Image (spheres, rainbow, N blue to C red):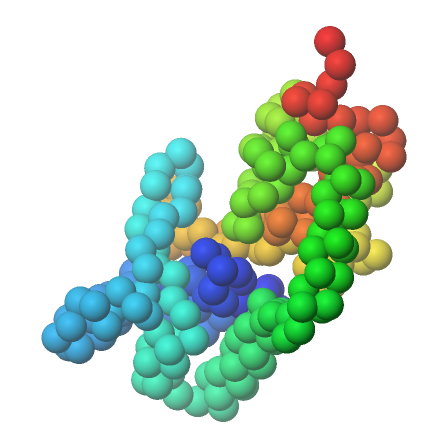
Length: 237
């Protein structure tokens, strides 16, 4: 099963596209239901707290979608019935719990703990300084990133970069989707994001595309650097 819950703007969310794919529904029906929920609530503020507008690309065009937090998903999924629907709801709850647990952190309770934390952070900064330019511009973004954007930062075309990662044993192609080899799966490096399109027969379809998480981008940076491949910002003239 694809990763159901992702981090966006420091919050655990899922997307209307992911919900449509998981529950076997048309995406336009899911977005319609979300808009009806917002309208029925009678409070735009309530809707904005649970749902956020977004967009996805299909054949060079942008189409609307929604991101939703745990409360928004719970409200939307109330109307989904059946044994499979129940299992998917339980899986969503599990992944929301796990994702929200990851973003929790402890604030130092005493001065010695605070000083120790500051010292640790200072040491990490000094070690990571050589790659700060790249991480500040590219890896500091907590959201998902497409392979094409990462490829551009390395001076490659998307096709060349995909072939490079394939040749290095990182990914393989299944149909029209690039996927990670087994040794790199389940490490949180990528997120499979669905997008809706209409085929030549006029039938609505959903296709998956792989995007890189911040953790995945950090992995690529370290792996490629070990092979002597650096982003353009770090390449010497």
